[in-house]
Length: 398
Image (cartoon, rainbow, N blue to C red; front, side, top):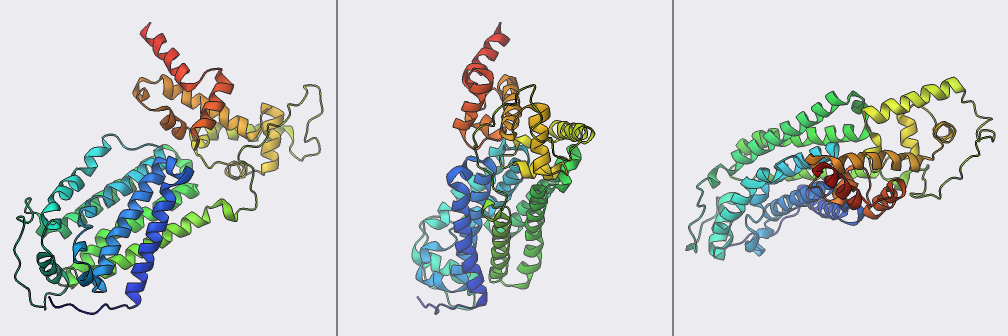
């Protein structure tokens, strides 16, 4: 078998850096408390899939595939998983759950995974010819016998067209999901999280356009390095968004679970008597807080903090803290617990969500830790979530 030397250029370096960063980012999303979020898990698997696709293109582009023929077309089934995973990420980022019947979206991937056995389980000579066919059609083939008849679906010749359609459909569905969310909750338009999600969705929507532009310009799969370069760009854009929202760079860090503030005596002077917050302004702020909690339910966001909530109410954290202590006699974390537990009670009683696990309900109402959810629920209701559900179920049966 004739082989070509490994070639490294600027494109190869960009693609390789994208693969390494994709692996790092995927593992980052899937581990620790981050991995407890459905959206993070979807994003993590999506990033790993993109890293695998780019990794194969890197091997092909640099001619390193000649040294590892067993890798020929190893990532091809992932063409049909990146679209669904991106849609799952978009949907769960907004609604804190997967779409209904989400498993059906993975059916094309499952079919192609089974079909891939017919080219995975082949002699190296056969894989050598396959690599030449896609990347170096100018080189002579060698004699090779098949172990299995390739492609029982007889659709593999249309892999580029099917990938394009899949990405186009799921990009459109993701953008429609964002649009419906903003129609239901207009205030979400200014949300940083939704802005980031919309930006990533448009980047993903450009993939079908790039396929249309790149594929006709190159014979076989020779132009895939341009697509891998774009994938590396999206991975680093995601990394930038993650770093931009990281608590590592914040100057207003608060402890995750501070000690409860002492209750104020009823006849004592207000804690913030020197504050510029008048009763009229305080009443207006309280009304805005109630409207915000009723319309947008920001307490369901696991990363909600006092400064973030104050920013959305166009006030200072000091004034918001004063309002909670003076008018509601609660600190910020008690307020979150009250609303989250109330939302959890509705989910535990609702027949439509009766099959949800306790940890899934905890995640839906904004808790990254199931134990923290249990503690808050027991403190506010006197029951564990499981006991509350059992009581509610028996009441409905009676």
